[in-house]
Amino acid sequence: MFDLTIGSSVEPGGRVRYELGRTNWEDRRIPDIRNPSATVQIPESRMVDVVILGDGYETAAQFESQLTGWLSGFAKLAVYDTFAGAFRIRALYEPSDAPASTARTSFYRCRIDDEDDDQISFDDSWWTADDTDGQVFRDRLFVAVDSFAGVNLQRYPADLDLGDDNTAIDNDTLSNVYRNLVVCMFVRTASDSNVSGMARPVPRPDPDDHRRVRVAFGAHRIHEFSHAFALLSDEYIDKNRTQASTRVDHPSTSVLTLSNLCHTTTDGDIPWAHLGPWGRIRRQASGTDPDPLVGWLWVGGHGRYGNVWHSEYRCLMNGSHDNFRFTQVQEDDPTANADGTYTEETGAGLRDGDRFCMWCQEIVTIRILEKTDQLHEPGDPSDLGDAAIEWWQRWEQGLRNEYWKLFDVPSQIADVEAMYAAMSPGARGEPLWQSDLYGVYDEAPDKPTNPVADIGDDELFALLL
Figure 1: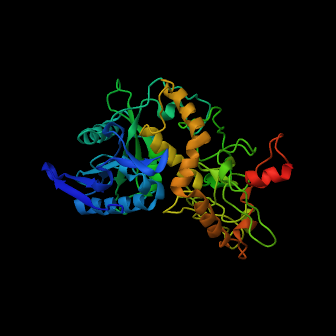
Figure 2: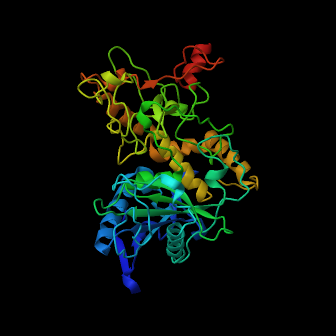
Figure 3: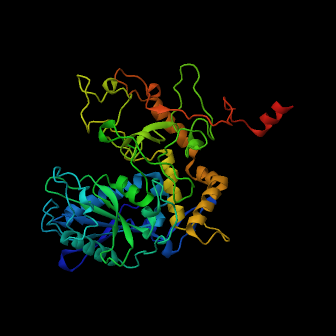
């Protein structure tokens, strides 16, 4: 049973310190990925520290209501619930004299969007700026982080070599970033108890100290946390459905470079192909049955429309913005206005608040195991980048089988396929399987035109007689 208890202690100056769900993590036990029926105790030095702060909260009660929602949202995600023993979650309330705003008079001086009081500002890289407000923001953030006893400050190497090829995760993403530390910054304005947010790496205030921490700002609590912790990308479309992605897939797959998006349609290069209908569980429609939908190529990702795909129709990492609901023919989509036009930011809401798509769930699992050193074995390369490639091969060659047992992935796939089969999102009630928002893979040159059925060894032997 997940512990939703939040303990608190009052400190001088009106500060309040909290421990969230302490019994979940005090024994530091997580499933043993090599034997899912057992658990292992991870060293304290491999715990993942989650530090939650709040800007613009004038009373502790305002902040505590956000903590309650965050912990509840965290517990709803199966992967975080399963590995709760790896996450030491603590929080600190600092009273603000004023809500966060464009004037930047709140305690941490987070900047609010000039035109939208319900949105953190994305402009001018204010979180790294050298002006007075930027310096105060970083000073106070790291004073708060460093005030927690035993906070885990191990980091990815400064010389980590992941390449720099316009990929989702590259050297700049992880170099000098704290490996087992994530900060969540709730941000309250006069009109919103926790504004729409983002995730960004924030450097320490000393310009000679290049260490950085990934910070999840604002609301959509576990969505932003999963950006910061698991390096997951947004799966929605933005920018008025016109901007194609210029990113490319990483040339060398490792547990550090995995992305929930891809930029190719070729079978053999789709990272979630094992989840698709041509994957480990072969499935196809017959007669009037709905087509299977998990693991195909669904349009859109990181706010772009073209040249980018994700693995399912819905996910915690999706959203609304400029999403199509059923068809890429704009005037025929249910998101269109009565006259057939489309208004920006009125797209379909495709976020599931309590579930990841199957591929995101697998990535988050791998990130947890990587950070807690559960993928390591004697003889692995000393260079982290090289070791991460070895770990990915180990995952594909055996550990994924254990992951499937731990989460009963076949049952999960069946449940999700049933969920999608029941959806009728078209303007005239058309079922989801008739949507043009997804496509199948382009077959690799060496792949048979018609994939063989997934049959057992005894059946295969009989066929060969």
